[in-house]
Length: 456
Image (cartoon, rainbow, N blue to C red; front, side, top):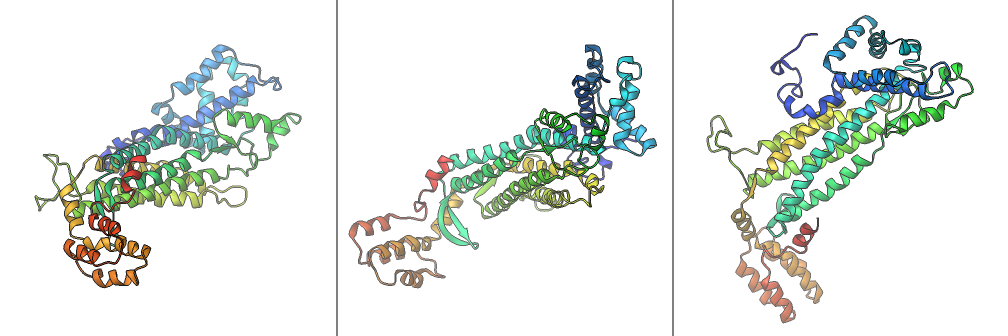
């Protein structure tokens, strides 16, 4: 098998971004897939031997068990290459692994006496579906959720840190009721907490019930045995949920749910990427400088928000793949076609782009510095946003046509502090209410924003 340099890689996940995705390689590389298949094959073999009802395959000695477990423990790229070499002859990946196992254990007479129980009554998809579920299980636990948690944690820190920093809102791109910078971060944290819960709560299903899901071969060999109960115990010992009704493949509905859940989280983060990009453009944020970095090849002054742009691009690629996976995988012609096999090999690519999106976003968040002067200047230029509280208080005290009067004063106009003060002074409302309105400014008219931000 030829090796290529990262600079020769066709995909950026194995080229430009290779080092950032090392956490996913044990899960989704070809070697990782074969190792998970090996784990299932060996554990199935051991489970058969440990079941008293199967007299033809007696319990293994400690030495035999050590030899079987050693195949898993010592499996790496070189061993995967050996399996792939066999596959060049078999043109079947799972059968190649079965032959490799038998070849590796050829000198162990105890095991070889019962070697035909390796892959006993299994269709390839019995091995594959459990392998894929374990791959996703490990990736979710060890790579994806820790990375997402880092983003959520940083956003929560920013929400609390900037809870009291007032900021002008923009609805439809126009000046609107003020908020705080921290509250806007808190909004995202709340959304992401819910999205994370959905990602975590999706159960991963598995089956090991034969060619079309009916235990046909199992019952042909041992007609009186409770194969469904045995299969359930086997699947559940891996922390998976047993699926009792399948065709040849486990139908992938749970996978689709999980990929949809990741896509939903990615959509929230894309929304954040675009908002922060806009806030950088408005000058609300500065970005920490690195001495040797270049923003533009021709404009020396540029400090571009590239991390948020990189994150948005990678999350977009991720969602294109995740949504294809979730739409394609639950569809199989009759009892099985092979289109899912081709698509499943891109799970790591989809989650790889997701992980890159998280990484870039976190890097960008860690570079941000708030420009309080820019935020204050933006607020000070928009006293007309106080039309909302003024007309609302007018409504309370029965002033006629309050909305229309404020519309006439403010719509399309830049209203100064003094103009707003004079208008309030002219109102026929209680003095206490008038004083409260006069005390309002665009930077203190923030409602519960700070309180909400600190609670997140």
